[in-house]
Length: 225
Image (cartoon, rainbow, N blue to C red; front, side, top):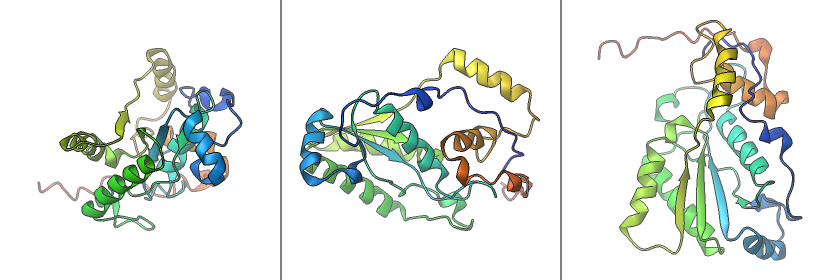
């Protein structure tokens, strides 16, 4: 965990400004069975699957940071264009941090099977397009290969892996904020960026007084390699 200083991200203004469209809940688990049938139609048979994991995020942020962030952003996005949002999906790849308190790490076979059967069940309920939106870096190799593997046999659904592009103008604004911070404040995990997002989305879950309680220094355990 890098030293954390806070800059509220301006790259996600739609999170605060999105307008609700339609009168049905977008979250799968909040619908009644009769309304679910209507929602499938209203969504044009599109379901979004936000993916995260349960792992340590420094001493100051919740274990579910990745999924809390990505699902909140998806929920706001579907207020602009309605689609179904699947419930929390924590079965991600996290072998590298399984030694940390609170981390849940499933076997590769189970992760694969969970993802496949979840897609199959989503499709069985009437959806034809499933959009993966990833909030966890440990899934960056898993998801492209999984998506490609579905082409090995005919399916009655299509999976799309959403990979957002950086807005140059917003990236420049955020970059200027980061440039004003100490050199070790930005490191990609439980750093200034992730902390700022969580402070925007769930301020109540961030313990800023604990942010620098651990150094986050490299332990050099791989130096012999």
